View 1 (cartoon, helix red, strand yellow):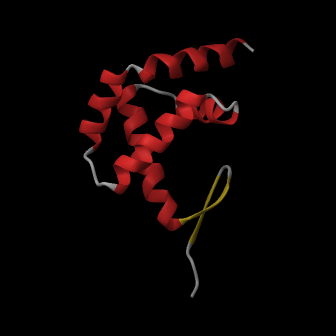
View 2 (view 1 turned 135 degrees about the horizontal axis):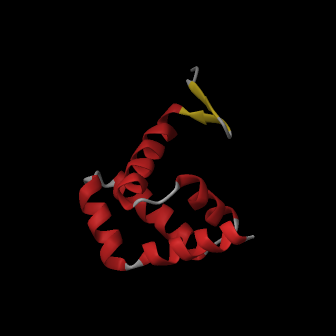
View 3 (view 1 turned 180 degrees about the vertical axis):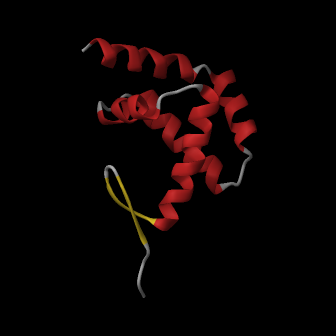
Length: 92
């Protein structure tokens, strides 16, 4: 069976992975998190960024509305850690 592929700036992504990326980007947009800086946090192995990405994927798998996920993320305080990681990477 052929799998559809979508080319993005970072390489080839399978179509079933694009829906999670759209979901994640929508959450970042509502949280005012720059997606590129978040990816930098992931590459630098920032544990809060990795936790947030897995949390978002879990919410996606459970089909939880984006607005509810955003409210829970704000309540958790993780956004502050992500912002501090982003600021650290800007100054480097």
